[in-house]
Amino acid sequence: MRRVAVIGVGVTQFGRHERTSAELFAEAAVDALADAEMPAGRVQALYYGNVVGGETEKQLHTGPQAASVLGIPTVPTTRFETACASSHAAFRHAVMDVASGTSDVVLVGGAERVLNVPTADSTEYFAYASDASWEQTLGLTFPGVFALVARAHMHKHGTTEAQMAAVAVKNHKHGVLNPKAQFRKEITLDMVLKSPMVADPLKLYDCCPFTDGGAALVLVSEEVARKSRRPIWVLASAAASDSMLIGDKRDLSRVPATERAAATAYRQAGIGPQDVDVVELHDCFTIAEIVATEGLGLFEPGVGGLAAEKGWTSLGGKIPVNPSGGLKAKGHPIGATGAAQICEVVTQLRGEAGPRQVEGARRGLTHTLGGNTATVLVSLFGRD
Amino acid sequence: MTEDTPTVTLGRFFEQAREGTLTGIRCGGCGALAVPPKALCPECGARRWEAVPLSGEGTIDSYTIIRVAPRAHADDAPYAIAAVRLREGVSLLGRVVDVPLNALAVGLPVRFRPIVVKDRSAVGFGPA
Image (cartoon, rainbow over all chains, first blue to last red; front, side, top):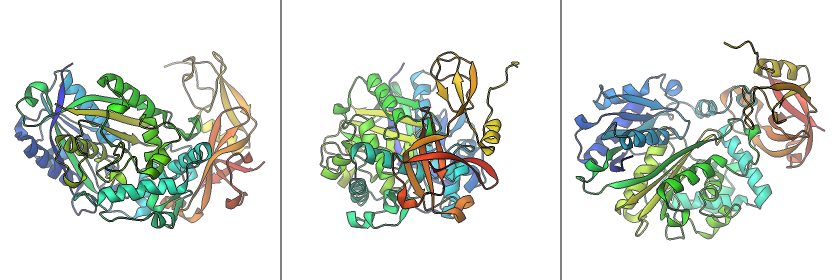
C-alpha cells in the first residue's frame, strides 16, 4: 500500500446558512483545492458525506449533486451515510482508494443543512439513526442515547454533572479562538448546570448545536504529496462497528467501537496514545467526550471526567482535546463533521492554528462517532 | 431462497408483546440468548434459534427522562426511557410507565408492560 497525505483543507463558517449543502461543500472544496494548489481537473474521485439531505432538503443523490455544483460532474462520486461519522467513513475509503494505487488525487468532504427546519423536526430526523422498530417507537432521541451512557458512567465511576459541564466550558473556551466556530463565547460551569434539562442528566449546554456547514480536503499519493509544500501524512484510518440496539450493548458506560477502532489505528500506525499530541474527537454531548478520551486510551476508564475537571484536556494541558472548540462550540454539521475534524488536525500539525495552536504538535488523532455508538472511525496523522 | 423461516420475526415479536409476552431466541449451537430478529448467532455463527418466553422481570441498568422530544412524541413529554436488564441476562429498551419520574434509579426492579405508542406496539416497563 502507498503512503497517503492530506495537502489541502477547507472549512466553511459553521452556523446558519441560507445556501444548500451542495453550495456549502463547494465553498469548502474550492478553498481546499486552492490550499493544495491543485487544479480541480486533476481530481479523480469524490468521497462525500451527507446525512439528512433527504429530509431537510428533500434531496437524495447528494454526492453527484455536490460534484456538479462544485464543477467536477464527471468524477466518480459516492455519498457515505454512517450517521454523524459519514465524512470520516468517506475519508477512510478515499485513503484506501489512493493507498491501493487506484487514484492519485481525490477529494473528500461533506456538508449538512439542518437549521432550515424547526428543532422538533431535526430532532426527529436525527433519531432516524436509531432503530425504527425498537427505539424510534419509544421516542428515543440522540440526547436520550447519551443520557443513558451518562447515567451508566455516573453510576459505575462516580462521574459528576459538574465534570461533564467542565467539558462544555473547556470547548467553549477553545471555540472563542476559532473564527469558523458557531459559538465564540465563554460559558461558566454554573450556566451549564442551570441550563434547561433536555434528557436527564444532560442539559442544553451538555449538547452540541444543530449546524449548517461544509468541509473538504485533498488527499493524494506520496508522489504527488512530495511536490506540495507541507503534506500531512495519514498514519492510519480505521473503522469499527457495534450492535445497533442500545439493549444489545453490555456496558453502557463504554463505547466498544471506539476502543476497537483505536486499537486498529494505533496498530496500523505503530504508535500508542502516549504518542499523540492533539486530538479532535466526537463531543456530540459532554459525556461523549469523557467516554471517548477513555476509549482512545488517553485516560483510564473512569478518569475522563476528572481529566476534564483538572484541565488535562485543555489547550496547554497534558493532552489538548478539541482545540477547535469541538462539536460543542465549533458546531456539528453532521455530514461535514468528520472531514472538518481532519481539517483541524491537519491545520494543527502544520503549525497554522494561530491562537489555538497546540505547541509543537507532531501527531494528531481524529475520532468520529455515528448513531447509537454503532459506528466509530479513528484516524491518525503525522508531519514530516 | 431458503425454506427456513426466522424463528421470531420482528412483526411476531411485537404481536406477542402486544398480547403480553416477551419472546427471546436461544441459540441451539451455543445457548446464547438474544433479542429477535437475528439470522445468525453473534456468538457462534449458528443458525439454529429456538423461541423462548422471557419472564419480563428485570432491573434498570440506565434511564433518562426525555424532555425535548421528536415531533411525533412531543405531546407525551416528559417521558422516561430505560435500558432494563432482564432476569435471563438480555436487556431491552422500554418506556417506563406508572413509576414517578423522581423514583427512577439504576437497579430499580421493573416488570414488562405491553404498551402502544402512536398506534404501534412497543416495549414498556411498569413497577415490579
